[in-house]
Figure 1 (cartoon, helix red, strand yellow):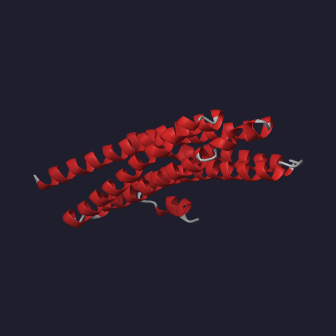
Figure 2 (cartoon, rainbow, N blue to C red):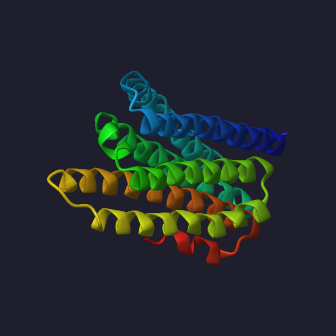
Figure 3 (cartoon, rainbow, N blue to C red):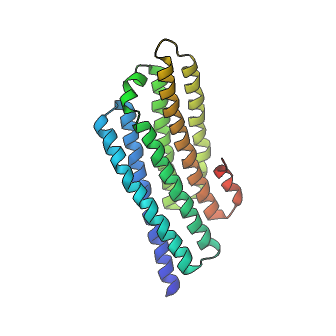
Length: 220
């Protein structure tokens, strides 16, 4: 009976992580819309919603530590709970990075005026959203093959960031520095969102296989 109760708690924890991930997914959607439109009201909504993500991080972290304390899990159960702690941290970091983009809403018209540069940022945001959806499809299905697709697909974001830097270096005129600083801030945040999403996928592969090689992405 005790084992069945513990397994039920583990299942509930996994579902709650999915709820938190869904909220972060919404945050990324808002971020992208703010990037595209500069909508100040939507930016305020995104900033306010971040409190929910922070609250879930605290609550689920405490719950996970409580399970470790009460149940003294070993082997795969312990690996699962430690992995949950890591995934929760990555979710919170992704949400925070989305806010870095949202906070640039007043600068959106300046970025949008540079069409090629802005197009790269828009593409990066699209891929970041796609990677995040893929990561949590993998988490929901506990599918290591799906998680493995993240590494290859994330290279698109790295390539886009290099192209962004080339566009920034080509800027000139009196407003070039302002545009460059804003574009780097937004582009770097989008690149890091992709990086943290890959970590989620690699952590899932570690969880399912026990192979520590998948933890290499976390060393940064």
